[in-house]
Amino acid sequence: MLKIGEFSTLTGISIHMLRNYDKIGLLKPEQIDCMNNYRFYVEKQIVRANHIRVLKSLGFGLNEISKILMDNTTDDMIRSFLESKIREKEESLSITKRQIAQMRQALNDLDTQNGCTLSVSVKKLSSRKLVSLRDFIREFTEEGLLWERLDRACRANGVKFADAQYCMAMTHSVDFEKKLIDTEVFRVVEQAGPDIEGLRFSDMSETEAAVVAFQGIYSRIGDINRYIYHWIVENGYSISGKAFNIYYISPENEPNPENYVTEICFPIKK
Image 1 (cartoon, rainbow, N blue to C red):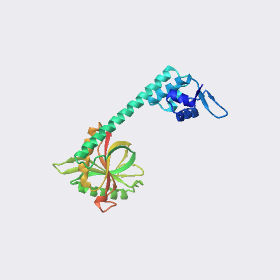
Image 2 (cartoon, helix red, strand yellow; image 1 turned 90 degrees about the horizontal axis):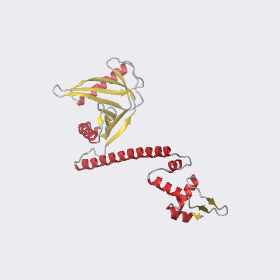
Image 3 (tube, rainbow, N blue to C red; image 1 turned 90 degrees about the vertical axis):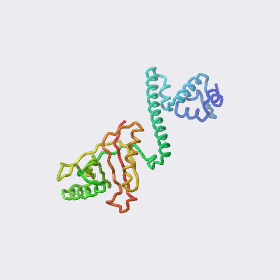
Image 4 (cartoon, rainbow, N blue to C red; image 1 turned 30 degrees about the vertical axis):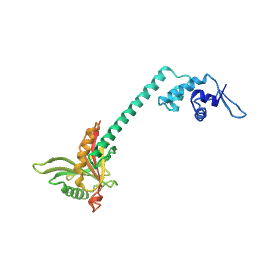
């Protein structure tokens, strides 16, 4: 029989890990001295110890290794474990490659003095019920007029806003020749209903979007839009819907434009 120190030397597994393997039942000693609790192993257990080391080096966790090394494990089961781990590693590798590419892009953006570097995140925007008003304006600064009309119409028709303290806007198109900007403004509501008095109700489904959140004046939005579009293309996404802005702090509740907080959202897909 081999004392735990000898077995550790022969297998390359630390005494601490051998005690842990004993505790979880992965590699139990052949015998434990009831007087002093000394652990003893036998030579044939070196084979199991080597299997454990190989599987750990391949990235398998201890729970997975326990299942693979069960006495009744078949070749088909082992094949299934290996195929599953390969898929997991390939997905992890893909994520790592994408992260490296994004970091390289960020380095390049730093060289070009781009203020949006490391600002784009990809996230799921939850579904919501909306009421909106859509019309043409001649300048982006006239968007506030649409908000006033939307709020008046909602009050007149008893539309109840949800607790969410933010609003949204979308530019559908811009006709530079005629100086017409097709704009729609949205508020989150408790319940969608039939369209009334120029108000349109809709359900926005959960959306994956490339998002930049920023604090400051709205004149930055054009540059940020261009940067997000560039980021989407460079990172292998495509735009799957119209971009929109979410206003968290806006002229409605903050007099200082430098304190406005806005999210610019581009729906995307791979």
